[in-house]
Length: 467
Image (tube, helix red, strand yellow):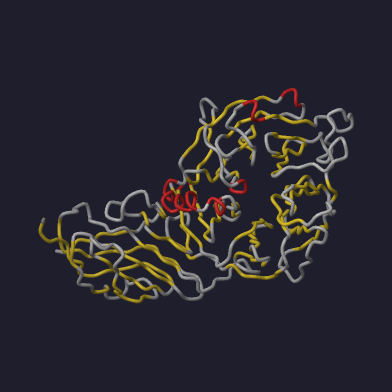
């Protein structure tokens, strides 16, 4: 009598922590160009549609429903976009700008950080170069608005502006008091140089490569206080993003990690939220540090997903606590990301070659023919030493899928085509198959225009003998 083995919940997502022969059902070995929805099913991603292009370098940020574009001495002008676009020209510092490191919004104004051809950094506010007390152009690599002041990472220092004026650097100014700096390395030797920061509940997390300092910052610098030091830092300043829960995600030397707070003690801790994809990221972290340093992250607003771009791949975290879903997947957009921006409910990506892409296109609902691949582990129905024969299969899907099966535990990369399906098979005859072995795995591939979904696969098994 056949028994039915079902995989109808993919809430574990992409997970490489265990081998293909020991990973649990519901986890996936590959999940490319797709994501896990709040119900634990696999959905195809939207298309990345190129809508504009301009010669590099330039940078951008989103504010409400407007895309703001910056360049020195002249910013590119875009027209015909599905959002309003405003260009901002930055004052020339006297040398060519080769890259932009950060853009931060302050009220209705913008603070921009750039890198000159000489290796020197420059900061602009409202298009003008920010000057120190002596009139020299200030330096800094990362900026963050917090409690009416602009904070910036500048080597061994965390510097901050006067209250209400990001350009004010004079601590003695009475109109905009509060400017100054914190020597982070004097508080902890591993906390140098400061490279990034993010609001962490009621505090500020200041990141270096090897450590993170948790600071209680106040408009009055006399009230600034170091609350905690954590022995983990970030390898990529632009990977640091606050999740909607208040936790902070970032790329560390060991993979994607999260700053969390204990509800009772209110003390910060670190979780291994990215452990499921560590084996994918660690070779890149180890062998190509220059690529990981350029990692970029964004929170996709429609569902609060964390996107992390590393070396041409976007790793996506779908996090839905109510459904007990913490699932990773990956996108291959076909270009290298220079920066992300969120404009309204849209994610906009700038490529390293100056192309401007809108996720979902102008309508936010466009799809392409990108190849979606779903691969399960090789499963054993809780009997790894028992031979089994697959009599037939049923699937629940939407869109055109190629269903492949593999039953060679000594070659988990070998799959053979079983059927091409366009919808669920419940109202049809089951898909016949004559596989035999101790383990069985499946690979589903979609490569057609339009949306697609894969929800379940049901295996009709005839159990054999124990080896």
